[in-house]
Image 1 (cartoon, helix red, strand yellow):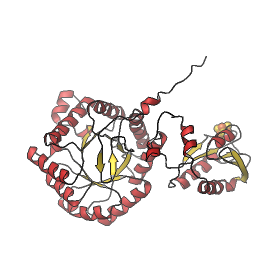
Image 2 (spheres, rainbow, N blue to C red; image 1 turned 180 degrees about the vertical axis):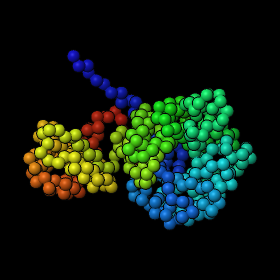
Image 3 (cartoon, protein in one colour; image 1 turned 90 degrees about the vertical axis):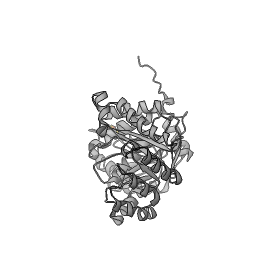
Image 4 (cartoon, rainbow, N blue to C red; image 1 turned 90 degrees about the horizontal axis):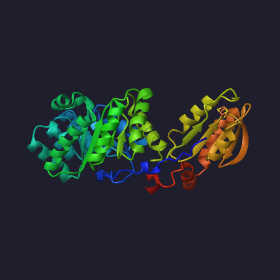
Length: 383
Ligand code: SF4
């Protein structure tokens, strides 16, 4: 006998954290989960950096980080800040003077580890510069660069060692009277990263920036990131995220959006439902699904589009979606919100679906009913 299944929807409730502002983007305290990425271009090459940031903004990024490895890079920050359509974060390692310079240049957040900048006086100087401008600081623990004494104490990078490292950096900021802190605990090993964030969520109320670091190329990196970040988000952990891919950073933004959309934490894109196909196919379903996905990638409209291969499950899914097609013999039946509207030849299916995507307006009530998460209000409905 089949057992009745119940899903613990409470697990999707977000854990409560402090709220900080990164420029005009709120992070933590129940704010919508923001998407971050990082420029690949040299920060010294302002034109290339701006072009990259603009492409990231068009793809849906909320916050962009840029490396500041030198005085030359720091000198370019005012121009980058002035031309960036989204808040800019300065990524600093070891050099407190560069952090102060970045704050003075108008960045929206600093990413640096206070334990690595050479003492309490320097931490206070950075904190003063950040506080004077209302900038948060992200403490970024990475399993690959833990302090030697922690590696000796724990024997290897463990979740406990990572949280202890974060605790040290956070305490240095707290000792300087600073609490606009964001924490990340990244690892390339997904179970380690998940465990580190779970421990941190129990200990800290600072917002958490999620990420699987060095996740690799999109093929593996998207899956690792979806599993690591998605697991935590489904448990209510995490306030902002970056997917780290060895690829054009625009791919990171698309992946981040897909993760948030899969959990209904963001709903602004075309959601495609497509059957896997089988021996009943009489249309080129895989090509159709891929082309619809590719051609709707940049469209910001929360619609569900079903691309189905045949009449077995096709009409049902196509009816449940906002727009759908069920394949027949070299043709497709088009549906809009449950009603079959017309039949088109296979060669016309894509254009017909795209026309309907332009015509049909989103219906939030229908979306909410379809999500099944009736006890939970997704952030996209609040914003
Ligand atoms: S909808 Fe039809 S073609 Fe697609 S998997 Fe189901 S039976 Fe096969």
